[in-house]
Length: 197
Image 1 (spheres, one colour):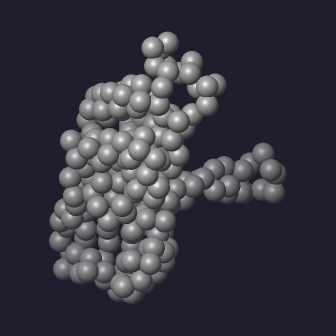
Image 2 (tube, rainbow, N blue to C red; image 1 turned 180 degrees about the vertical axis):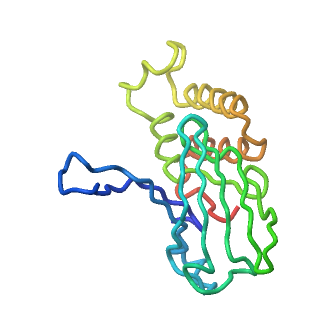
């Protein structure tokens, strides 16, 4: 679990009657402060998002953290944080978006932007990169016939990753972090995601 990491899940919700066919899925999300580095701050280990929405076409998540409503206090002078996150097409990182705050005096201000102040990478990316670079021979049909070694797969994957993220308007900083993780996967590094970088 990363430092202030985001977690998303679909939860079953029953309709108005007891018929199983009437179940719907609802998006649930929270920020986890379970990382030991978070214990230096007096904050709950799980802080739920409210007013959650997700636009599948634009891959945009929106939600609020309600400090005043849920905890009867402000956090860092804010009564509410308002999030907008735009994910890349493979859900490996947050491309763009913003975090705004509603201050205790009622004014709204921008706190941080994704791709600039905040770089969020899906923690499962290393497993994906490891399989992509060091995968079995069954994976070779994913690559042109000239891509046969781990180094070839790394080079091919590196180019594809940088081109895709640039086309999707990822920041230079986000692309650099993703490429660094791909490189560390190729080099066989363990636990190379620095949750505070």
